Length: 216
Ligand SMILES: Nc1nc(C(F)(F)F)ncc1COP(=O)(O)OP(=O)(O)O
Ligand SMILES: [Mg+2]
Image (tube, rainbow, N blue to C red; front, side):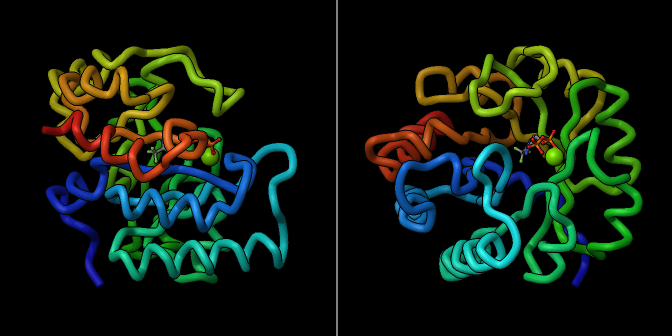
C-alpha cells in the first residue's frame, strides 16, 4: 500500500466527524451511522476526557465503529492511540503537537494516513516534512469540545498558510457549525471537522447534509 495522494486526501477531508463515547448521550454507533447516511467523508474515533472508555470496552467500541466506516468506504482514523490503530488496522491516526513524535509515529504506522494538528506556519511545515498526510488547523472558532486548545486563530489563518505556500490537505477544526461553515470554505480549507455540531444535533444526518451545503 502506498501513501495516500493529496487530491484523494483532500476529498476525504470534506466533512470530518470526530467523536468518542463521551460526546453523545446515546449510542455512538447509532450517531455515526446517521452521520454516514448524511454524508460524512471521514471519521475519527477520539475517546478522551472524563468517562472515556479504556481497555476491552474501548477496543470493542472501536471495532464496531470501524466496521460502520468500512461498510461506507470512509476512512476510520484513531486519535492519539497509535497501538489501538495498529491493532485494528485502522486507516490512519491523528496526533497533536503534544503527542508522540511524528517521525516515530510514521515509522510505526507505515503508509497509513497520518494527520497532525498545526497551529503555526512552522508547525505546519515541520509536520509535512515529517510525513503528515493532512493538517488539522485551528481552533478557527471558540470551542467547548476541547478544554486545552491553543488560542483561536480564525478561519483566515488557513488562507495565510496557503499564501505561505502550504498547499497540502488542510482540515479546519474548532467550533465549526452549520452557521459558520461557509467561512471555513471561503478560508481555503479542504475540509471542516466537527464534534458537537453532529454529535449533539437532534438529527445528525440532517446536520451533516447542512454542513455539506457549505461546499456547494
Ligand atoms: N483531534 C484532532 N483532529 C483534528 C482533525 F484534523 F482531524 F480535524 N485536528 C486537530 C485535533 C486535535 O488534536 P490534538 O491537538 O492532539 O488534541 P486531542 O488529542 O485532544 O484531539
Ligand atoms: Mg492528540
